[in-house]
Length: 439
Image (cartoon, rainbow, N blue to C red; front, side, top):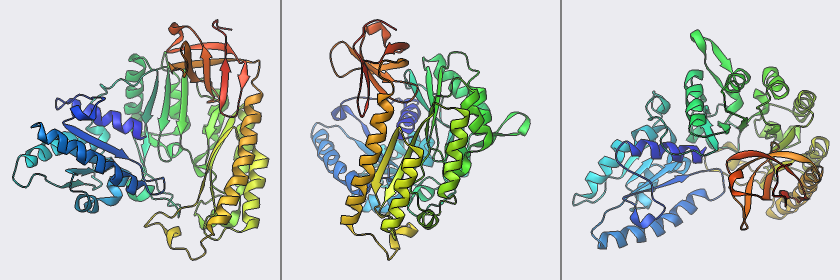
């Protein structure tokens, strides 16, 4: 989502005469777009701001000025504190205010010309109007594989998560707006679109004649766009995986056979403490329905180990769920407290040593499953969307329908195309092929 947001911020600033540069030393405006999911995210931002401050000072000696802005979820969480703590920052802008960027940057530029030297602007309110109604149409190239935000915010309030506080309540864009943006992306060359949202499958946007569309309906309509070969989505929540969306996985050819469906834990006691509002068996039943609809579906998930109060028995429940489901890919982390979340004040914090041991055991099992899943593709012919140069000369990289990273020795004209290749090698992280001819 931050990739998409960065592109839309560039679109907004393009209308004010800005254009992107790869060299920060040339930049009249530097924006750090931030995420608050990872541990110590704010500290990493402040560290980066130290480097930006040195760059700003060097430009000032050359008679050039630089507006420095911080955007995204760290900006939303820190607000006034960031302006106070980091004097280099001219502007703090939350995720719901990107459409105001041109005016905010202009204010910051004007302030830098005054004796005070900076405005210290903080724009972190949740405005009543949607930013999507005011952002200009896309001008920044999205490429053959594009992102498209259809839903933002979260109403789930998991006890470990800051998203409801930094992104606000759930909001779904009108279906007509999503379809129009998707058509523009395809016209610009996109063959694959990944639909984005904090809870993307909670989508309930306004459809035709004031009706409400669910996420399954939206996917079916997107699949009718001529030239759109692949549809993906992330991130989803088990509570919003309804029967229509499950059926779409078996009925919509363009919907890729890969689903990231975070469960976080396999213990019902821990799931209750997380406020997930589903049980481990609820999750298993959803997986069974999905695989009945699409037998070759690759499953991915997120796991938190060492959540406050987690016992050895709770962790073993998670391991049991992983063995039952079997994953093609997964992200796993030790629990780390996020200030302001209910879990951060829990008394039963798990010792760091226990977290480390449990994470190692979980990751070993997940790695074994991922390697096994990949090994099933040895010698098979798979269609790959090649979207970038590979690591070696004469090599291209792309993705299979099952989200494998694929590297292949291939002619340059395969770039930005879907080409069938024969898998010659598999590994824990992806597939590769040495052939220069399509299978």
